[in-house]
Length: 374
Ligand code: SF4
Image 1 (spheres, rainbow, N blue to C red):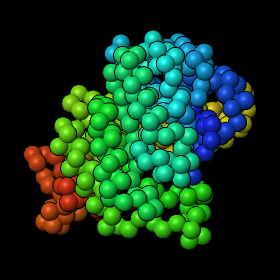
Image 2 (spheres, rainbow, N blue to C red; image 1 turned 45 degrees about the vertical axis):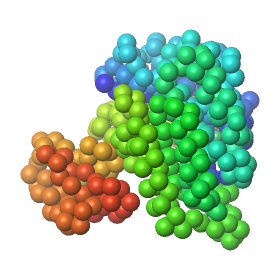
Image 3 (cartoon, protein in one colour; image 1 turned 90 degrees about the horizontal axis):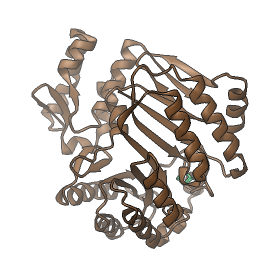
């Protein structure tokens, strides 16, 4: 089992909070897709196992024309062994989902759509420079359903400057009304170099206070769990049978290949990350060189990865696996570091699984950092 991620770094416009690598130079799209296909060919031996999940993320994959999406899938199938029952996710902006795109999605290998809704408040959407409004989110889901797309995820964000608890409640209720299979929700992060961070540094906006963040996260969990969603990862909620298989692979130490500018790859021995510049990426691929840096993983860094990723999940860390893969010393270290958190009700040990409690979710970063080896 392995995963494949393809990065599509094109956006029609830039949202003010976004720290992802993307460009508005749409004239480069077709040449960039040529490079993606070539990278898929060059790296056809990177993964040992069959691909079980494919994820076209961005940027904005829904900005690609259907011919280019077809070319990417053709190259994926040509150069890789792909399982019969794959999960193939396609990230979309709500305003890109026309009836024609929805019908195309249904006819393509894509069987899961992840949509960046972010908010149902038109004021917030306009402030953060999203291209869509709330009614376009609703229309997009209707169009996808009409085309018989049966696995839809939406992303929400909370903690915007001056966002009230009531606005957030309304957002959650609007999301629940759509009856989508999966919801991801993230608190706003002030990424270095973004327009949003600049506004904050210039004192033109005020950061949401800690108490409001925590209240919003609590409301999120309560409402989604009450509506039948499983809270299976810190920021992710799914109806039964609809966890993201691709993201679950990241949290389960499954190898993945990342194709495209700024994409990351992992094969249990090393991590690689491609250059985050489209022109340099395309030039290097044209010379048949993968423009990637590599970090070879030590036992400590592998252990830290397991702690960091597994503690985000509801199942937590499998202590039997720690003993088997890392040995008694690492197991003893984990028990020792976890003990005060268990005593304080922030973690719990169920059978052989160590995981965060609801109280622990709110201080997950500091707990994870305590349990890391390096
Ligand atoms: S948030 Fe998404 S759509 Fe907005 S700039 Fe970033 S990648 Fe593009």
